[in-house]
Image (cartoon, rainbow, N blue to C red; front, side, top):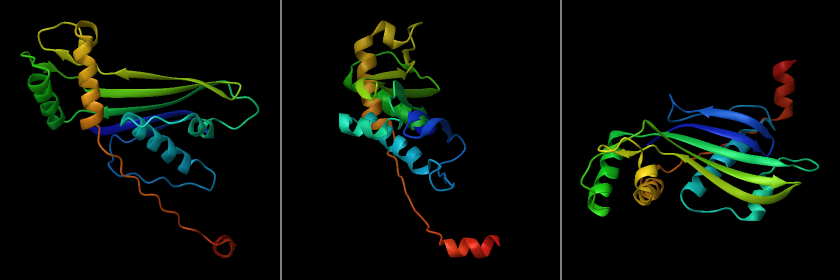
Length: 186
């Protein structure tokens, strides 16, 4: 799988941003201090931890809510990924060998997962998880979610645990001395 994009909403100081990765495997975030670079990386890192099964505790969730008097709303992180041919082969093998299915599978182009964290007056209430995984048996007109929900859930779990790629985040800070800035811009 290849990460296509991340959408981050109400995460700390970020109101809403889409990080498009569709043409890049390596990205660089450049910006002024306090512009949200670290916050974006924290959101992406949290997404990856959750999709790999590491659920955040309430203390962690309280750290990601927007600052302010009384935040009421939903913090959401959506990751969109694209299937590669080798992913389809691995999932098909799991489908046939582990789930003992005879039919083939039709894959969607994209896989997305959204985590929503609901707050009411700065108090964490609940987490919602939403996915778009429109995989279906090649013998069916509808996707597996509607025709064989148990197998769909097993394929989803297998995909999250074994197919979603690891995130490699390299975070470098290059300090710039104010005397340098004064000389450079005077």
